[in-house]
Image (cartoon, rainbow, N blue to C red):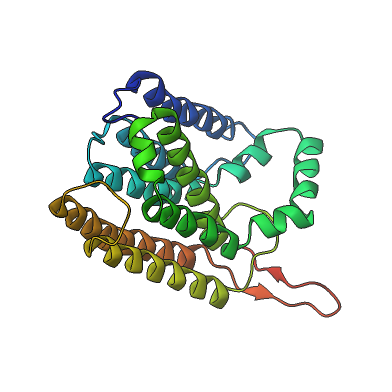
Amino acid sequence: MTGQHGDGVGPLLLVPLLVFWVYLAAALRQRDPGRGGWSHWRTASFGAGAALLAVAAVLPGHDLVGHMWRHLLVGMLAPLGLVLGAPGTLALRTVRRDIGRAALRVLRHPVPRVAAHPVTGLLLTAGGLYLLHLTPLYRATLAHPGLHGLVLLHFLASGYLFTWAIAGPDPGPHRPEVPLRLVVLGLSVTAHAALAQLMYAGLVDTAAPVAQLRAAATLMYYGGDLAELLLALALLVTWRPVVRRAGSEPVPSPA
């Protein structure tokens, strides 16, 4: 991503566009006879997520408010669109069956189960945000564009993981029940609100005027609430009741 560093907008802008082109090509393949088609809503959702990443790539980030807009787009809103596009399911329908089965076996390993847990996603997203603003890390990103890019990449990856763990439609390790996911989502809301209040009070290690601090804190508070409300709605929309069969593991009911 770019901003005050002036690092190449062009190449970074092409990345989300290329990713969407690959997704669209796979979605169009599903229109072949016998494949059953692919949801236009899924395609539109993934396209919206890719578009938000493209906006973040050209968004001016010369101050704390611009940085906060990027965090909101890259770490919260874009992942929601990408996740609801169900790229994993599309990939499994596109690749050979043996490759798909191998991928699903990997997802059943204990390590992916821990990595895909909502609490892990919360620790990565909220923990990264606190680390950025309560340590000299934010100041360091102003002087080192490469570090700034790595921080944004962390926001994207952790935001995608958290969003998927809460409301992702793709297959993967067993998710906790919906009440636990709602509790974790509530903790995320609380964590963002608490950091926003610390920022508004100036109790962060961020080199910015008071007006910028308060504007960025307000954006984090209300923008974060909006993103997490949308995530809660996505959870309700994608939730499927668990059907318990005698002598077998509980399985989700058909969509």
